Image (tube, rainbow, N blue to C red; front, side, top):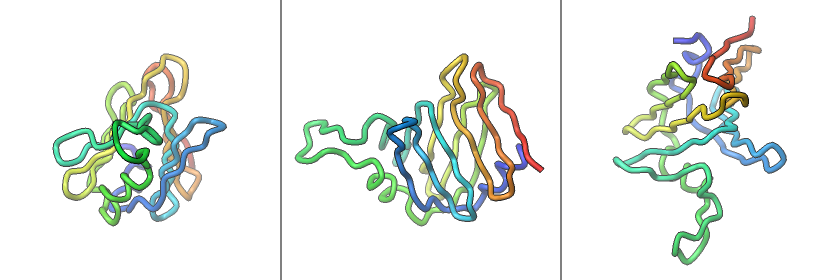
Length: 137
């Protein structure tokens, strides 16, 4: 396990924002840990896909558009991160208490898929093509 991933253990998701300029989703965890995602991601809960990265604002036959931040809060608010894994291609899975998970798919041969940033200048980057690089002190 990468050292920086260990710092995400037992953290709680505090906020989620979407930056329209960069089209990044930003997941802020307790302890100053931030996950910036430029790739596809989904929230899996209760044995199904509860939310996908493009679902925010979609109607899907509902009476109001889906609010991704609200859905994330409903599913994982107050739950601690129990485990994190990174695949050989830079895909990341963050599992929360009660088996909800955020799955990030590093989906480009050139673009960075995600960055995990810590309060101590450590960072892990899923580079294009599947390489995962860790830097910091």
